[in-house]
Length: 199
Image 1: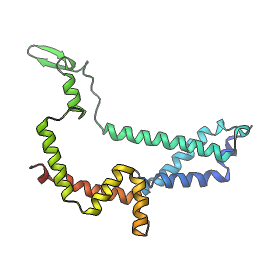
Image 2: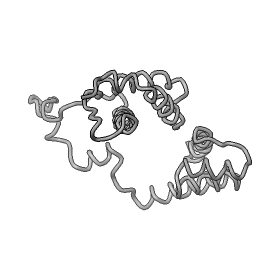
Image 3: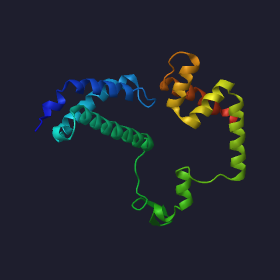
Image 4: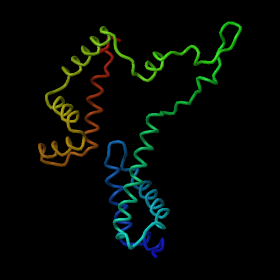
């Protein structure tokens, strides 16, 4: 039976970890400064899972690759949860009491389903709100160059990775996913101009 050291000290382990960490940190939701931290977390995860390695079921490289894919999946889910949470405290609408005249009632007694949809931005737009939104989008698009509109459309249809490959071919030099993300942020700024909403 293999030991932890057979996995952790295997020549392929460090190289696979380094490669996976660099690939991961090329994503727009990571940065190059995250590489060392990701490598360290990957090493710890591989060490924790190394007791599960069975030489009869496959090679060390395959085991490490599977373990790293598992860690990356968990890390991406963790970051998405953290991004959605955004530091907001959780409040129980059943246990939270508010004053209503001389009495105290639970928050759930006065909140409706419509309030919930509005809080999570799932409520439908009125015809007037939809018309205003369409006009703002039209104005925002009119501020973009043909190249910017082309990039925006390509990302919407095919994703950031595809846009990076396509623009690398068009430009004749590497154009990374991070650069695509930066371009999207710059384009987004044109849609967030207060003049578009009349503020």
